Image 1 (tube, rainbow, N blue to C red):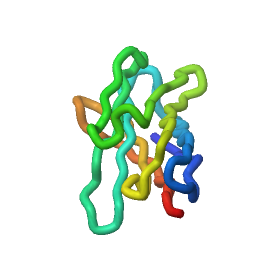
Image 2: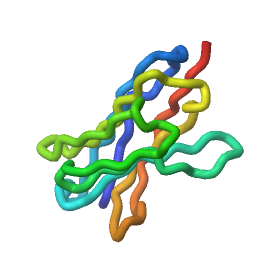
Image 3: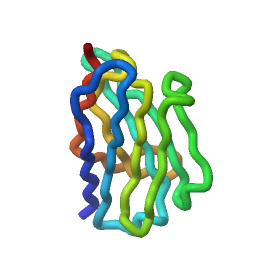
Image 4: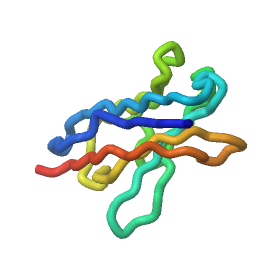
Length: 117
């Protein structure tokens, strides 16, 4: 079965950094685009970043552009989200997903990111 497991979340101060990881199994990881979404309480799910299957192209939400970097290591079946210059409004549960036909199909359990002083 397809499984996605996120890790790396935590509590950080504004301006701090975190690196999230998501490891996939049950599918050929290198064949799929991957993405990171986030969901804050009372808010709709938001696409944060996307990366193509080979890692050659990326896309970011305007709210994180210049601060976050998505990358992947297909040999490790892992996609990363490097989060720098974190702001309180980045507080959310972050999920990675496998993408098919430009849509998220599978989800991990999520990892909590809290940015607070």
